[in-house]
Image (tube, rainbow, N blue to C red; front, side, top):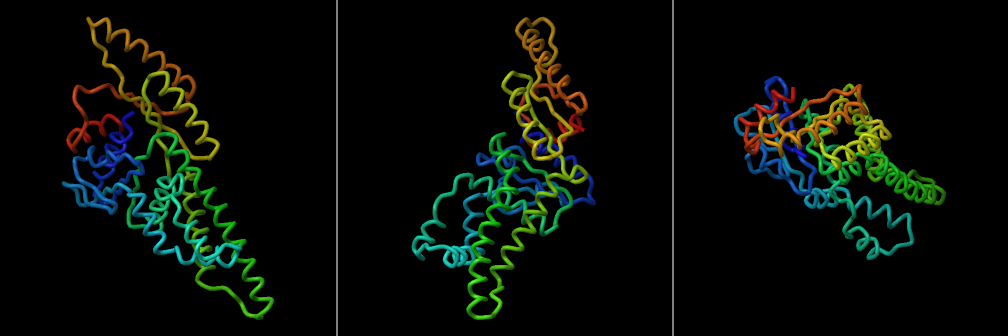
Length: 292
């Protein structure tokens, strides 16, 4: 629906302010951000050609997961070893399993890392398709529950140790759990703060696009994630003399009216189809001026 192109254009526009340091990154497993910017990207921020304050990356979920296991794997294994009846081998096998939703989890992990580092002034997130994105945005609550379970296992072990040894069992694993909990809380607060975060819905004036957008906005409202802008992309230009194009345009206008009626307090931006693909900084700048 043009989400990557719109996200890239937004970041290009923000980067016009040389005082701001901008980072755009993609959590879509099928990355196309590099194609939009016409630049090869990796799992680490790279300076976008032609800028000194604009960086981009495409998140590699598998690599991020491996890095996460290297950094925190021993702590999590120790918690499971201490707080469950699982054998060491069973814990290792459990921890090495492929995790459903890994892309979303690791996408959120990188977001958390960037927010903690505070190296950038503005973050533009090129999301995956709707289903993936909603799972990602729901992750802070899910991860908080996950941390609570690990904490219960850990505190159960600490209670037993303190009962028999009369010593405090607080160590780096407790610090790991507290740090994770604080970070998840920070991300959740950031996502739901309308002064700091905004989710921009990108849709097309067709039945499936409109209905998917409505369901998405309902879910975002439930999560208290602010949405104030809707971009309607891929609109057929007003052409005279072509019965086919005129019919397509009239059909699209009905869906545009439906969206505006349903969300009359929202800001709408309408983008007509272009004869060529919007790729590269020059074309992204032109689109950015239309978006803003």
